[in-house]
Length: 222
Image (cartoon, rainbow, N blue to C red):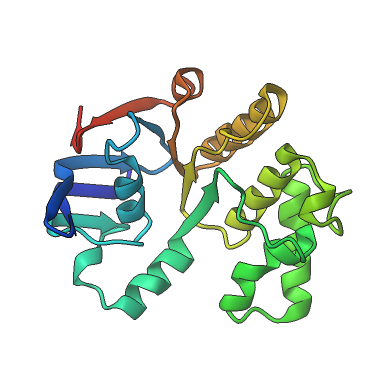
């Protein structure tokens, strides 16, 4: 198995006025290709900082983070942006869909940034929406869809570029039980297809569905 994500003795500190916050303390963690890992911990434990580093939205102060073998800290900002765009798909608790766009148009957005031609964008977006069971909702706007349908749209958007890694931050946090079950089944299917899935969750039942649970508290991984 290939190691897709690897953190080695990662530290991240923030300065808020005179206060110093050690968000991550000597964190080491590796995730293999096709593995589903759940990250749990109380509010303020460092989960969001860890997710930001895994998604190349932030870099460590000390230690190293390797994504697909690339030492992220040594990359230029432009190279880091390209790596994030090509390798990582994001799913957020609040969906982050643009309300004025249809489901298809929201899913097309990452492809626009890649310079994919309009006709090809449309085909790929429709395929991604079909993949998550929304073939009949492609021209609906977020306000015309349920929370579960919006999250599946967000998942289609994350998938449309065929990333190696999916980072899901509380993907079921705003969903009812039935919608959460649909989203989790989709994530499990993607993992079975070889995607690497890392999810943050406060829900112990959701976490137990992952192959491995990593607990973080006060910036320390247990």
